[in-house]
Length: 576
Ligand code: G
Ligand code: G
Ligand code: MN
Image 1 (cartoon, protein in one colour):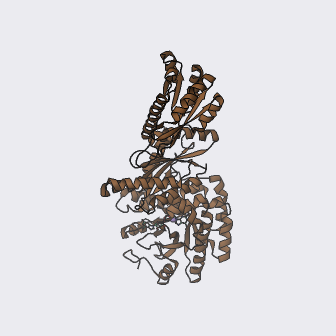
Image 2 (cartoon, rainbow, N blue to C red):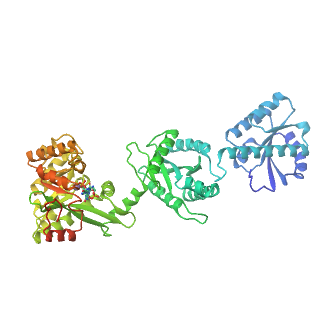
Image 3 (cartoon, helix red, strand yellow):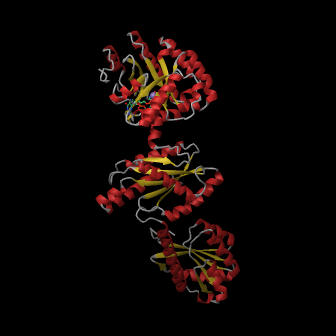
Protein backbone atom coordinates (compact mmCIF):
# COMPACT_ATOMS: atom_id res chain seq x y z
CA UNK A 1 0.00 0.00 0.00
CA UNK A 2 1.21 3.43 -0.83
CA UNK A 3 1.41 5.61 2.27
CA UNK A 4 2.38 8.95 0.86
CA UNK A 5 -0.22 9.76 -1.77
CA UNK A 6 -3.42 8.38 -0.22
CA UNK A 7 -5.37 6.41 -2.82
CA UNK A 8 -8.90 7.37 -3.72
CA UNK A 9 -9.72 3.74 -4.35
CA UNK A 10 -9.00 0.73 -2.17
CA UNK A 11 -8.73 -2.62 -3.86
CA UNK A 12 -10.10 -5.63 -1.96
CA UNK A 13 -9.04 -8.94 -3.45
CA UNK A 14 -11.28 -11.75 -2.27
CA UNK A 15 -10.86 -15.52 -2.65
CA UNK A 16 -14.11 -17.46 -2.35
CA UNK A 17 -13.81 -21.07 -3.51
CA UNK A 18 -17.44 -22.27 -2.99
CA UNK A 19 -20.72 -21.01 -4.46
CA UNK A 20 -21.99 -20.33 -0.94
CA UNK A 21 -19.00 -18.17 -0.12
CA UNK A 22 -19.30 -16.28 -3.39
CA UNK A 23 -22.96 -15.63 -2.70
CA UNK A 24 -22.15 -14.23 0.76
CA UNK A 25 -19.52 -11.98 -0.71
CA UNK A 26 -21.65 -10.75 -3.57
CA UNK A 27 -24.34 -9.70 -1.12
CA UNK A 28 -21.83 -7.89 1.04
CA UNK A 29 -19.80 -6.29 -1.75
CA UNK A 30 -22.65 -4.14 -3.01
CA UNK A 31 -22.99 -2.59 0.43
CA UNK A 32 -19.20 -2.22 0.90
CA UNK A 33 -18.67 -0.30 -2.34
CA UNK A 34 -21.15 2.29 -1.08
CA UNK A 35 -18.91 2.92 1.94
CA UNK A 36 -15.56 4.70 2.15
CA UNK A 37 -12.54 4.19 4.37
CA UNK A 38 -10.55 7.33 5.17
CA UNK A 39 -12.10 8.97 2.12
CA UNK A 40 -11.36 6.14 -0.33
CA UNK A 41 -14.00 3.96 -2.00
CA UNK A 42 -13.73 0.17 -1.96
CA UNK A 43 -13.57 -1.88 -5.09
CA UNK A 44 -14.02 -5.65 -4.81
CA UNK A 45 -12.58 -8.37 -7.04
CA UNK A 46 -13.65 -11.94 -6.32
CA UNK A 47 -11.52 -14.89 -7.47
CA UNK A 48 -12.57 -18.54 -7.39
CA UNK A 49 -9.29 -20.41 -7.73
CA UNK A 50 -6.43 -20.41 -5.25
CA UNK A 51 -3.82 -20.36 -8.06
CA UNK A 52 -5.30 -17.16 -9.50
CA UNK A 53 -5.30 -15.58 -6.06
CA UNK A 54 -1.63 -16.43 -5.48
CA UNK A 55 -0.67 -14.74 -8.77
CA UNK A 56 -2.83 -11.66 -8.08
CA UNK A 57 -1.42 -11.28 -4.57
CA UNK A 58 2.10 -11.56 -5.92
CA UNK A 59 1.36 -8.62 -8.23
CA UNK A 60 0.93 -6.50 -5.13
CA UNK A 61 -2.01 -4.40 -6.33
CA UNK A 62 -4.38 -5.32 -3.49
CA UNK A 63 -4.77 -3.00 -0.51
CA UNK A 64 -6.43 -5.77 1.49
CA UNK A 65 -7.14 -9.48 1.10
CA UNK A 66 -10.21 -11.42 2.15
CA UNK A 67 -10.32 -15.23 2.29
CA UNK A 68 -13.54 -17.16 2.58
CA UNK A 69 -12.50 -20.81 2.17
CA UNK A 70 -11.88 -24.01 4.06
CA UNK A 71 -9.98 -23.20 7.29
CA UNK A 72 -7.06 -25.56 6.58
CA UNK A 73 -6.60 -24.15 3.11
CA UNK A 74 -6.66 -20.58 4.44
CA UNK A 75 -4.01 -21.46 6.98
CA UNK A 76 -1.71 -22.76 4.24
CA UNK A 77 -2.30 -19.66 2.11
CA UNK A 78 -1.60 -17.33 5.04
CA UNK A 79 1.68 -19.04 5.82
CA UNK A 80 2.78 -18.94 2.19
CA UNK A 81 1.98 -15.23 1.88
CA UNK A 82 3.66 -14.15 5.10
CA UNK A 83 6.73 -16.27 4.39
CA UNK A 84 7.18 -14.33 1.20
CA UNK A 85 7.26 -11.14 3.23
CA UNK A 86 3.97 -9.81 1.84
CA UNK A 87 2.52 -7.48 4.46
CA UNK A 88 -0.94 -6.76 2.90
CA UNK A 89 -3.69 -6.84 5.56
CA UNK A 90 -5.67 -10.12 5.47
CA UNK A 91 -9.17 -10.72 6.77
CA UNK A 92 -10.57 -14.26 7.04
CA UNK A 93 -14.23 -15.34 7.12
CA UNK A 94 -14.81 -18.16 9.58
CA UNK A 95 -17.76 -20.42 10.24
CA UNK A 96 -17.88 -19.20 13.84
CA UNK A 97 -15.78 -17.44 16.43
CA UNK A 98 -14.56 -20.63 18.06
CA UNK A 99 -10.97 -20.05 19.29
CA UNK A 100 -9.94 -23.47 18.00
CA UNK A 101 -10.73 -22.29 14.47
CA UNK A 102 -9.66 -18.68 14.85
CA UNK A 103 -6.38 -18.87 16.77
CA UNK A 104 -4.42 -20.91 14.17
CA UNK A 105 -5.53 -18.51 11.45
CA UNK A 106 -4.40 -15.46 13.40
CA UNK A 107 -1.14 -17.20 14.24
CA UNK A 108 -0.57 -18.00 10.56
CA UNK A 109 -0.79 -14.33 9.65
CA UNK A 110 -4.43 -13.24 9.44
CA UNK A 111 -4.97 -9.75 10.82
CA UNK A 112 -8.59 -10.26 11.82
CA UNK A 113 -11.53 -12.68 11.39
CA UNK A 114 -15.27 -12.27 10.82
CA UNK A 115 -17.73 -15.14 11.53
CA UNK A 116 -20.14 -15.64 8.58
CA UNK A 117 -23.07 -14.79 10.83
CA UNK A 118 -21.67 -11.30 11.43
CA UNK A 119 -20.73 -10.53 7.83
CA UNK A 120 -22.45 -7.21 7.06
CA UNK A 121 -21.10 -4.41 4.83
CA UNK A 122 -20.73 -2.09 7.81
CA UNK A 123 -18.79 -4.54 9.95
CA UNK A 124 -16.69 -5.57 6.98
CA UNK A 125 -15.74 -1.95 6.29
CA UNK A 126 -14.88 -1.26 9.94
CA UNK A 127 -12.77 -4.40 10.22
CA UNK A 128 -10.94 -3.62 6.97
CA UNK A 129 -10.33 -0.07 8.18
CA UNK A 130 -8.78 -1.29 11.42
CA UNK A 131 -6.62 -3.79 9.56
CA UNK A 132 -5.29 -1.28 7.03
CA UNK A 133 -4.59 1.30 9.73
CA UNK A 134 -2.75 -1.21 11.88
CA UNK A 135 -0.77 -2.34 8.91
CA UNK A 136 0.13 1.25 7.99
CA UNK A 137 1.32 1.82 11.54
CA UNK A 138 3.40 -1.32 11.48
CA UNK A 139 5.03 -0.32 8.23
CA UNK A 140 5.76 3.12 9.62
CA UNK A 141 7.28 1.65 12.77
CA UNK A 142 9.36 -0.73 10.74
CA UNK A 143 10.54 2.14 8.53
CA UNK A 144 11.45 4.24 11.57
CA UNK A 145 13.39 1.40 13.12
CA UNK A 146 15.43 0.92 9.96
CA UNK A 147 16.03 4.40 8.57
CA UNK A 148 17.79 7.60 9.41
CA UNK A 149 15.09 10.27 9.43
CA UNK A 150 17.35 13.16 8.54
CA UNK A 151 18.61 11.77 5.24
CA UNK A 152 15.98 9.11 4.58
CA UNK A 153 18.79 6.58 4.12
CA UNK A 154 18.79 3.10 5.67
CA UNK A 155 20.42 3.06 9.11
CA UNK A 156 23.19 0.76 10.32
CA UNK A 157 20.77 -1.97 11.36
CA UNK A 158 19.10 -2.22 7.96
CA UNK A 159 22.46 -1.85 6.22
CA UNK A 160 23.88 -4.80 8.11
CA UNK A 161 20.90 -6.94 7.09
CA UNK A 162 21.21 -5.83 3.47
CA UNK A 163 24.97 -6.43 3.68
CA UNK A 164 24.52 -10.07 4.76
CA UNK A 165 22.16 -10.67 1.86
CA UNK A 166 24.30 -8.86 -0.70
CA UNK A 167 27.43 -10.77 0.31
CA UNK A 168 25.60 -14.08 -0.05
CA UNK A 169 24.52 -13.09 -3.55
CA UNK A 170 28.03 -11.89 -4.41
CA UNK A 171 29.53 -15.15 -3.24
CA UNK A 172 27.11 -17.14 -5.40
CA UNK A 173 27.96 -15.08 -8.48
CA UNK A 174 31.69 -14.86 -7.69
CA UNK A 175 31.65 -11.07 -7.50
CA UNK A 176 33.82 -8.64 -5.54
CA UNK A 177 32.16 -6.07 -3.31
CA UNK A 178 33.67 -3.01 -1.69
CA UNK A 179 32.49 -1.97 1.74
CA UNK A 180 33.16 1.73 2.32
CA UNK A 181 33.13 3.68 5.56
CA UNK A 182 32.96 7.37 4.70
CA UNK A 183 33.21 10.45 6.92
CA UNK A 184 32.97 14.14 6.11
CA UNK A 185 36.21 15.81 7.17
CA UNK A 186 34.67 19.14 8.15
CA UNK A 187 31.64 17.77 9.97
CA UNK A 188 32.82 18.19 13.56
CA UNK A 189 34.12 21.68 12.87
CA UNK A 190 30.91 22.75 11.18
CA UNK A 191 28.82 21.32 14.02
CA UNK A 192 30.96 23.19 16.55
CA UNK A 193 31.32 26.50 14.74
CA UNK A 194 28.17 26.87 12.64
CA UNK A 195 25.70 24.86 14.66
CA UNK A 196 23.69 21.69 14.38
CA UNK A 197 21.49 22.97 11.57
CA UNK A 198 24.40 23.61 9.20
CA UNK A 199 25.87 20.23 10.08
CA UNK A 200 22.57 18.51 9.30
CA UNK A 201 22.31 20.43 6.06
CA UNK A 202 25.72 19.11 5.08
CA UNK A 203 24.68 15.55 5.90
CA UNK A 204 21.52 15.82 3.81
CA UNK A 205 23.34 17.30 0.87
CA UNK A 206 26.08 14.70 1.05
CA UNK A 207 23.49 11.90 1.18
CA UNK A 208 21.93 13.25 -2.00
CA UNK A 209 25.27 13.44 -3.77
CA UNK A 210 26.16 9.90 -2.77
CA UNK A 211 22.84 8.58 -4.02
CA UNK A 212 23.13 10.53 -7.26
CA UNK A 213 26.55 9.06 -8.06
CA UNK A 214 25.97 5.46 -7.11
CA UNK A 215 24.09 2.77 -8.99
CA UNK A 216 20.65 1.74 -7.86
CA UNK A 217 22.02 -1.66 -6.94
CA UNK A 218 24.64 -0.11 -4.63
CA UNK A 219 23.74 0.29 -0.98
CA UNK A 220 24.06 3.57 0.91
CA UNK A 221 23.31 4.04 4.58
CA UNK A 222 23.97 6.51 7.34
CA UNK A 223 25.13 4.71 10.45
CA UNK A 224 26.09 6.87 13.41
CA UNK A 225 27.05 10.52 13.56
CA UNK A 226 28.77 11.51 10.38
CA UNK A 227 29.53 8.02 9.10
CA UNK A 228 28.06 6.79 5.83
CA UNK A 229 28.33 3.16 4.82
CA UNK A 230 28.38 2.12 1.16
CA UNK A 231 28.45 -1.24 -0.54
CA UNK A 232 29.52 -1.25 -4.19
CA UNK A 233 30.23 -3.96 -6.68
CA UNK A 234 33.79 -3.77 -8.01
CA UNK A 235 36.20 -5.58 -10.30
CA UNK A 236 38.87 -7.84 -8.84
CA UNK A 237 41.70 -5.49 -9.84
CA UNK A 238 39.95 -2.56 -8.09
CA UNK A 239 40.60 -0.07 -10.91
CA UNK A 240 36.90 0.80 -11.22
CA UNK A 241 36.68 1.10 -7.45
CA UNK A 242 39.53 3.59 -7.33
CA UNK A 243 37.82 5.69 -10.00
CA UNK A 244 34.43 5.60 -8.29
CA UNK A 245 36.01 6.51 -4.96
CA UNK A 246 37.87 9.40 -6.56
CA UNK A 247 34.65 10.61 -8.18
CA UNK A 248 32.77 10.44 -4.87
CA UNK A 249 35.44 12.53 -3.18
CA UNK A 250 35.26 15.14 -5.93
CA UNK A 251 31.49 15.29 -5.85
CA UNK A 252 31.33 15.67 -2.07
CA UNK A 253 33.94 18.39 -2.06
CA UNK A 254 32.33 20.43 -4.85
CA UNK A 255 30.41 23.55 -3.87
CA UNK A 256 26.68 22.92 -4.20
CA UNK A 257 23.61 25.09 -4.45
CA UNK A 258 22.81 24.82 -0.74
CA UNK A 259 26.21 25.11 0.86
CA UNK A 260 29.88 24.43 0.36
CA UNK A 261 30.84 20.82 -0.03
CA UNK A 262 33.18 19.05 2.31
CA UNK A 263 36.17 16.89 1.66
CA UNK A 264 35.70 13.36 2.87
CA UNK A 265 37.74 10.37 3.99
CA UNK A 266 36.98 6.82 2.96
CA UNK A 267 38.20 3.49 4.28
CA UNK A 268 37.49 0.50 2.06
CA UNK A 269 37.52 -3.26 2.64
CA UNK A 270 37.05 -5.63 -0.27
CA UNK A 271 35.01 -8.85 -0.19
CA UNK A 272 36.25 -11.56 -0.46
CA UNK A 273 39.88 -10.37 -0.63
CA UNK A 274 40.16 -8.69 2.75
CA UNK A 275 37.60 -10.85 4.51
CA UNK A 276 34.46 -12.90 3.91
CA UNK A 277 32.90 -11.90 7.20
CA UNK A 278 30.62 -8.84 7.18
CA UNK A 279 31.56 -7.71 10.71
CA UNK A 280 35.25 -8.03 10.00
CA UNK A 281 34.88 -6.14 6.73
CA UNK A 282 33.27 -3.30 8.64
CA UNK A 283 36.14 -3.23 11.12
CA UNK A 284 38.70 -3.26 8.33
CA UNK A 285 36.98 -0.45 6.44
CA UNK A 286 36.95 1.63 9.62
CA UNK A 287 40.61 0.86 10.33
CA UNK A 288 41.50 2.09 6.84
CA UNK A 289 39.34 5.18 7.43
CA UNK A 290 41.31 6.02 10.56
CA UNK A 291 44.54 5.81 8.61
CA UNK A 292 43.20 8.26 6.07
CA UNK A 293 42.05 10.65 8.78
CA UNK A 294 45.39 10.42 10.59
CA UNK A 295 47.11 11.29 7.34
CA UNK A 296 45.02 14.46 6.98
CA UNK A 297 41.84 13.22 5.28
CA UNK A 298 40.51 14.02 1.80
CA UNK A 299 41.57 10.63 0.47
CA UNK A 300 40.60 6.99 0.42
CA UNK A 301 42.46 3.84 1.29
CA UNK A 302 41.80 0.21 0.63
CA UNK A 303 42.43 -2.04 3.60
CA UNK A 304 45.09 -4.56 2.85
CA UNK A 305 47.06 -6.84 5.14
CA UNK A 306 50.20 -5.97 3.27
CA UNK A 307 49.21 -2.34 3.92
CA UNK A 308 49.98 -1.50 0.35
CA UNK A 309 47.72 1.48 0.07
CA UNK A 310 45.85 2.63 -2.95
CA UNK A 311 44.94 6.26 -2.42
CA UNK A 312 43.17 9.00 -4.31
CA UNK A 313 46.36 10.98 -4.80
CA UNK A 314 48.08 7.86 -5.99
CA UNK A 315 45.37 7.04 -8.56
CA UNK A 316 45.57 10.56 -9.95
CA UNK A 317 49.37 10.34 -10.06
CA UNK A 318 49.20 7.03 -11.88
CA UNK A 319 47.19 8.76 -14.56
CA UNK A 320 49.34 11.86 -14.74
CA UNK A 321 52.84 10.38 -14.52
CA UNK A 322 53.13 8.56 -17.88
CA UNK A 323 52.53 11.82 -19.77
CA UNK A 324 54.82 13.92 -17.59
CA UNK A 325 57.82 13.63 -19.94
CA UNK A 326 55.78 14.74 -22.96
CA UNK A 327 54.31 17.65 -21.00
CA UNK A 328 57.85 18.67 -19.98
CA UNK A 329 57.03 18.47 -16.29
CA UNK A 330 60.12 16.41 -15.45
CA UNK A 331 63.43 17.99 -14.74
CA UNK A 332 66.81 16.91 -13.42
CA UNK A 333 69.00 18.69 -10.89
CA UNK A 334 72.69 18.13 -10.26
CA UNK A 335 74.12 18.06 -6.75
CA UNK A 336 77.92 18.57 -6.82
CA UNK A 337 80.30 16.18 -5.10
CA UNK A 338 83.66 17.35 -3.88
CA UNK A 339 86.84 15.32 -3.80
CA UNK A 340 88.37 15.73 -0.33
CA UNK A 341 91.97 15.56 -1.59
CA UNK A 342 91.83 17.90 -4.59
CA UNK A 343 89.07 19.98 -2.90
CA UNK A 344 87.48 20.24 -6.36
CA UNK A 345 84.17 19.13 -7.84
CA UNK A 346 84.65 15.54 -8.93
CA UNK A 347 81.13 14.69 -9.86
CA UNK A 348 77.44 15.24 -9.27
CA UNK A 349 74.40 13.20 -8.31
CA UNK A 350 71.56 13.46 -10.80
CA UNK A 351 68.24 14.01 -9.03
CA UNK A 352 64.88 13.81 -10.72
CA UNK A 353 62.18 16.42 -10.07
CA UNK A 354 58.50 16.42 -11.04
CA UNK A 355 56.77 19.77 -11.21
CA UNK A 356 53.14 18.81 -11.63
CA UNK A 357 50.46 21.43 -12.25
CA UNK A 358 48.13 19.27 -10.13
CA UNK A 359 50.37 18.16 -7.26
CA UNK A 360 53.03 20.85 -7.16
CA UNK A 361 56.64 19.77 -6.64
CA UNK A 362 56.48 16.03 -6.01
CA UNK A 363 59.41 14.31 -4.32
CA UNK A 364 60.89 11.27 -6.11
CA UNK A 365 60.28 9.35 -2.87
CA UNK A 366 56.59 9.70 -3.69
CA UNK A 367 56.43 9.31 -7.44
CA UNK A 368 59.17 6.74 -8.10
CA UNK A 369 57.08 4.00 -6.36
CA UNK A 370 54.11 5.04 -8.53
CA UNK A 371 56.29 4.91 -11.64
CA UNK A 372 57.47 1.45 -10.58
CA UNK A 373 53.99 0.04 -10.06
CA UNK A 374 52.64 1.42 -13.34
CA UNK A 375 55.67 0.45 -15.38
CA UNK A 376 56.38 4.09 -16.29
CA UNK A 377 59.76 3.73 -14.57
CA UNK A 378 61.47 2.30 -17.68
CA UNK A 379 60.72 5.33 -19.81
CA UNK A 380 61.30 7.83 -17.03
CA UNK A 381 64.54 6.15 -15.97
CA UNK A 382 65.69 6.06 -19.58
CA UNK A 383 64.92 9.75 -19.92
CA UNK A 384 66.97 10.58 -16.80
CA UNK A 385 69.91 8.55 -18.12
CA UNK A 386 69.81 10.39 -21.41
CA UNK A 387 69.72 13.81 -19.69
CA UNK A 388 72.67 12.84 -17.51
CA UNK A 389 74.74 11.40 -20.34
CA UNK A 390 74.08 14.41 -22.57
CA UNK A 391 75.06 16.80 -19.76
CA UNK A 392 78.16 14.75 -18.95
CA UNK A 393 79.28 14.94 -22.56
CA UNK A 394 78.67 18.70 -22.60
CA UNK A 395 80.83 19.28 -19.49
CA UNK A 396 83.51 17.03 -20.91
CA UNK A 397 83.56 19.21 -24.00
CA UNK A 398 84.04 22.29 -21.80
CA UNK A 399 87.01 20.68 -20.08
CA UNK A 400 85.41 19.12 -16.98
CA UNK A 401 85.42 15.36 -16.56
CA UNK A 402 82.62 14.91 -14.05
CA UNK A 403 81.46 11.56 -12.79
CA UNK A 404 77.67 11.66 -12.89
CA UNK A 405 75.79 9.44 -10.46
CA UNK A 406 72.32 8.36 -11.55
CA UNK A 407 69.87 6.69 -9.17
CA UNK A 408 68.43 3.48 -10.59
CA UNK A 409 65.59 1.52 -9.02
CA UNK A 410 64.86 -2.20 -9.25
CA UNK A 411 61.91 -1.68 -11.59
CA UNK A 412 64.23 -0.43 -14.32
CA UNK A 413 65.83 -3.87 -14.60
CA UNK A 414 62.53 -5.64 -15.05
CA UNK A 415 62.05 -4.90 -18.75
CA UNK A 416 65.36 -6.64 -19.49
CA UNK A 417 66.83 -4.15 -21.96
CA UNK A 418 68.46 -1.83 -19.43
CA UNK A 419 72.07 -2.57 -20.40
CA UNK A 420 71.24 -2.33 -24.14
CA UNK A 421 69.69 1.08 -23.62
CA UNK A 422 72.60 2.26 -21.52
CA UNK A 423 75.17 1.05 -24.05
CA UNK A 424 73.30 2.78 -26.87
CA UNK A 425 73.07 6.09 -25.00
CA UNK A 426 76.77 6.08 -24.11
CA UNK A 427 77.72 5.42 -27.74
CA UNK A 428 75.28 7.95 -29.19
CA UNK A 429 76.52 10.77 -27.00
CA UNK A 430 80.11 9.62 -26.84
CA UNK A 431 80.46 9.63 -23.07
CA UNK A 432 83.31 7.52 -21.64
CA UNK A 433 81.56 4.94 -19.44
CA UNK A 434 83.74 5.61 -16.39
CA UNK A 435 82.07 9.04 -16.17
CA UNK A 436 78.78 7.37 -15.34
CA UNK A 437 77.99 5.75 -12.01
CA UNK A 438 74.75 3.97 -11.13
CA UNK A 439 73.50 4.32 -7.55
CA UNK A 440 71.60 1.31 -6.30
CA UNK A 441 70.28 0.64 -2.82
CA UNK A 442 71.46 -2.44 -0.96
CA UNK A 443 68.04 -4.00 -1.49
CA UNK A 444 68.53 -4.08 -5.24
CA UNK A 445 71.78 -6.03 -4.86
CA UNK A 446 70.48 -8.62 -2.45
CA UNK A 447 67.09 -9.30 -4.03
CA UNK A 448 67.01 -11.37 -7.18
CA UNK A 449 70.71 -12.17 -6.87
CA UNK A 450 70.68 -14.75 -9.64
CA UNK A 451 68.84 -12.61 -12.16
CA UNK A 452 70.94 -9.54 -11.40
CA UNK A 453 74.37 -11.15 -11.43
CA UNK A 454 74.52 -11.37 -15.23
CA UNK A 455 73.20 -7.85 -15.56
CA UNK A 456 75.84 -6.44 -13.23
CA UNK A 457 78.52 -8.37 -15.07
CA UNK A 458 77.31 -6.81 -18.34
CA UNK A 459 77.29 -3.34 -16.80
CA UNK A 460 80.81 -3.95 -15.51
CA UNK A 461 81.93 -4.91 -19.01
CA UNK A 462 80.34 -1.75 -20.33
CA UNK A 463 82.65 0.08 -17.92
CA UNK A 464 80.14 2.07 -15.87
CA UNK A 465 80.55 2.37 -12.12
CA UNK A 466 78.24 0.87 -9.51
CA UNK A 467 77.71 2.52 -6.13
CA UNK A 468 75.80 1.29 -3.10
CA UNK A 469 73.41 4.07 -2.05
CA UNK A 470 72.22 4.66 1.52
CA UNK A 471 74.94 2.28 2.70
CA UNK A 472 74.44 0.99 6.22
CA UNK A 473 70.67 1.31 6.40
CA UNK A 474 69.48 -1.74 4.53
CA UNK A 475 71.24 -4.99 4.91
CA UNK A 476 73.66 -6.24 7.51
CA UNK A 477 75.39 -9.03 5.59
CA UNK A 478 78.24 -7.73 3.49
CA UNK A 479 78.87 -10.82 1.37
CA UNK A 480 77.15 -9.23 -1.60
CA UNK A 481 80.04 -6.76 -1.89
CA UNK A 482 82.19 -9.71 -2.93
CA UNK A 483 79.71 -11.02 -5.48
CA UNK A 484 79.02 -7.84 -7.39
CA UNK A 485 81.39 -5.49 -9.18
CA UNK A 486 80.80 -2.58 -6.81
CA UNK A 487 83.02 0.52 -7.12
CA UNK A 488 81.76 2.89 -4.44
CA UNK A 489 79.89 3.14 -1.14
CA UNK A 490 77.69 6.09 -0.21
CA UNK A 491 77.45 6.35 3.56
CA UNK A 492 73.86 7.15 4.43
CA UNK A 493 73.30 10.66 5.73
CA UNK A 494 71.81 9.37 8.99
CA UNK A 495 75.38 8.39 10.04
CA UNK A 496 76.83 11.73 8.94
CA UNK A 497 74.32 13.88 10.86
CA UNK A 498 75.78 12.81 14.23
CA UNK A 499 79.36 13.68 13.30
CA UNK A 500 81.55 14.49 15.07
CA UNK A 501 79.64 14.60 18.38
CA UNK A 502 78.30 11.05 18.40
CA UNK A 503 81.07 8.59 19.22
CA UNK A 504 79.03 5.72 17.78
CA UNK A 505 78.53 7.48 14.47
CA UNK A 506 82.22 8.39 14.35
CA UNK A 507 83.14 4.74 14.94
CA UNK A 508 80.70 3.51 12.27
CA UNK A 509 81.82 6.00 9.64
CA UNK A 510 85.49 5.31 10.39
CA UNK A 511 84.83 1.57 10.01
CA UNK A 512 82.94 1.98 6.73
CA UNK A 513 85.73 4.06 5.24
CA UNK A 514 88.37 1.55 6.37
CA UNK A 515 86.38 -1.39 5.05
CA UNK A 516 85.62 0.36 1.77
CA UNK A 517 89.30 1.10 1.20
CA UNK A 518 90.26 -2.46 2.10
CA UNK A 519 87.91 -3.61 -0.65
CA UNK A 520 89.26 -1.00 -3.05
CA UNK A 521 86.05 1.02 -3.05
CA UNK A 522 85.65 4.76 -3.20
CA UNK A 523 83.72 6.08 -0.17
CA UNK A 524 81.33 9.01 -0.45
CA UNK A 525 79.63 10.76 2.47
CA UNK A 526 76.21 12.24 1.76
CA UNK A 527 74.17 14.78 3.73
CA UNK A 528 77.20 16.74 4.85
CA UNK A 529 75.97 19.97 6.42
CA UNK A 530 78.61 21.23 8.89
CA UNK A 531 82.29 22.29 8.53
CA UNK A 532 83.32 19.98 11.44
CA UNK A 533 81.93 17.05 9.47
CA UNK A 534 84.11 17.92 6.51
CA UNK A 535 87.13 18.16 8.81
CA UNK A 536 86.42 14.76 10.38
CA UNK A 537 85.79 13.09 7.01
CA UNK A 538 89.03 14.55 5.59
CA UNK A 539 90.92 13.30 8.60
CA UNK A 540 89.73 9.71 8.30
CA UNK A 541 90.42 9.63 4.55
CA UNK A 542 86.87 9.64 3.15
CA UNK A 543 87.09 10.23 -0.62
CA UNK A 544 84.19 12.47 -1.54
CA UNK A 545 81.44 14.50 0.09
CA UNK A 546 78.04 15.69 -0.96
CA UNK A 547 75.60 17.84 1.00
CA UNK A 548 73.59 21.04 1.24
CA UNK A 549 76.49 22.85 2.91
CA UNK A 550 78.81 22.46 -0.09
CA UNK A 551 76.22 22.38 -2.85
CA UNK A 552 72.48 22.04 -3.15
CA UNK A 553 70.90 20.25 -6.11
CA UNK A 554 71.04 22.80 -8.97
CA UNK A 555 70.29 23.19 -12.66
CA UNK A 556 72.84 22.20 -15.33
CA UNK A 557 73.45 25.91 -16.03
CA UNK A 558 74.14 26.65 -12.37
CA UNK A 559 76.55 23.74 -12.09
CA UNK A 560 78.21 24.90 -15.32
CA UNK A 561 78.80 28.32 -13.76
CA UNK A 562 80.17 26.77 -10.60
CA UNK A 563 82.62 24.68 -12.66
CA UNK A 564 83.66 27.69 -14.70
CA UNK A 565 84.38 29.66 -11.51
CA UNK A 566 86.84 26.95 -10.45
CA UNK A 567 85.03 26.42 -7.17
CA UNK A 568 86.94 24.59 -4.42
CA UNK A 569 86.37 23.79 -0.76
CA UNK A 570 88.09 26.72 0.99
CA UNK A 571 90.40 26.42 4.04
CA UNK A 572 87.62 27.00 6.56
CA UNK A 573 85.96 24.09 4.82
CA UNK A 574 83.24 26.05 3.02
CA UNK A 575 82.87 26.21 -0.69
CA UNK A 576 84.29 29.48 -2.01
O1 G B 1 66.30 14.44 -4.40
P1 G B 1 65.56 13.87 -3.29
O2 G B 1 66.14 14.00 -1.93
O3 G B 1 64.13 14.35 -3.27
O4 G B 1 65.50 12.30 -3.62
C1 G B 1 64.79 11.43 -2.81
C2 G B 1 65.05 10.03 -3.24
O5 G B 1 64.67 9.84 -4.62
C3 G B 1 66.50 9.65 -3.13
O6 G B 1 66.55 8.41 -2.44
C4 G B 1 66.96 9.46 -4.53
O7 G B 1 67.84 8.38 -4.62
C5 G B 1 65.69 9.18 -5.31
N1 G B 1 65.81 9.64 -6.69
C6 G B 1 66.08 10.87 -7.13
N2 G B 1 66.15 10.89 -8.48
C7 G B 1 65.89 9.63 -8.90
C8 G B 1 65.85 9.01 -10.19
O8 G B 1 66.05 9.60 -11.24
N3 G B 1 65.55 7.67 -10.23
C9 G B 1 65.33 6.97 -9.11
N4 G B 1 65.05 5.68 -9.23
N5 G B 1 65.37 7.52 -7.87
C10 G B 1 65.68 8.84 -7.76
O1 G C 1 68.74 8.38 -1.30
P1 G C 1 69.68 9.36 -2.01
O2 G C 1 71.00 9.28 -1.45
O3 G C 1 69.72 9.18 -3.50
O4 G C 1 69.16 10.80 -1.67
C1 G C 1 69.75 11.93 -2.22
C2 G C 1 68.97 13.09 -1.76
O5 G C 1 69.46 13.61 -0.54
C3 G C 1 69.01 14.23 -2.74
O6 G C 1 67.81 14.28 -3.41
C4 G C 1 69.15 15.48 -1.92
O7 G C 1 68.03 16.34 -2.09
C5 G C 1 69.22 15.01 -0.50
N1 G C 1 70.35 15.70 0.17
C6 G C 1 71.52 16.06 -0.39
N2 G C 1 72.32 16.70 0.52
C7 G C 1 71.62 16.75 1.67
C8 G C 1 71.90 17.28 2.97
O8 G C 1 72.96 17.86 3.26
N3 G C 1 70.94 17.14 3.92
C9 G C 1 69.78 16.51 3.65
N4 G C 1 68.86 16.40 4.64
N5 G C 1 69.46 16.00 2.45
C10 G C 1 70.37 16.11 1.45
MN1 MN D 1 71.31 8.64 -4.35
